[in-house]
Length: 376
Image (tube, rainbow, N blue to C red; front, side, top):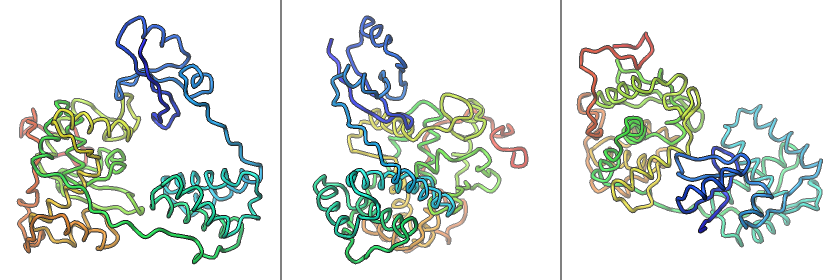
């Protein structure tokens, strides 16, 4: 029996993915393992990531780190502070994980005994030796600095904390032909609608899966993105063609809580499954570039700029706090139009395309997609 196994994170759980030859006798043997599950998105079987299963599948057993009572108490205090200050769930998760890694490195030390020199040592011996990214290094510095200021009530000497120079990387952009191929690759209406919304409204991954049916205002032709990065609301124009596609999806899938839900009603669609949808589209479109969902957002901004949209308006559509963030698209744009987007008539706002996915609704059919007060 030829097989392979590797640890994965699936729906925020630690699991072990198993792949093997497609034979019924092998499948029957795997089904005997406790809590084994089939993933329709990953197309493989997976089991709990336990010491027993690691030994069974010849995966090195991790040494489990158990923090001291002092560290556990301090981390709980810090997490309570972050929650009270309404930090975003992603920031809290990032900071807490960074501190766990930091204190694991100084496992034998008391929190109060760690000083600036130790942090420099951690930077050189852990972050740099493992060749971790500059953004990770910055996150680590931010977490440590805030922790010692709030929990330990002492300020570290910031000038001694080594921060990397920010990397000057350009956004990855797809051509309009490549985007069209991706959006037309799927036959599943739900998958088409998800990828189309990301591109046509310049959404981040979490913004898409956090949408609710009432966030579509068909009469005004806008999409409302609520409490996105930086806890900001914003709106984005949405074309009639895409609204019709969403109506078709809504009638066939009937989501209850979230606009896009998983296999079970009321359960939010997962980020991992959304990435899998894109991966399948790339394969069908024969695109070999390492495309991520964020490439569609970059492509949206760049295509708008190339079509003459004002940079300040693109900034508002993307939800950027600083215009400097938006200006990076001028370096990847192939044209330098001077036409201002807001000077164009409204019927030309949607010069980007939607997939050639033909809705089945009649023009005079009332929509069951939007809440009652927004039905057309």
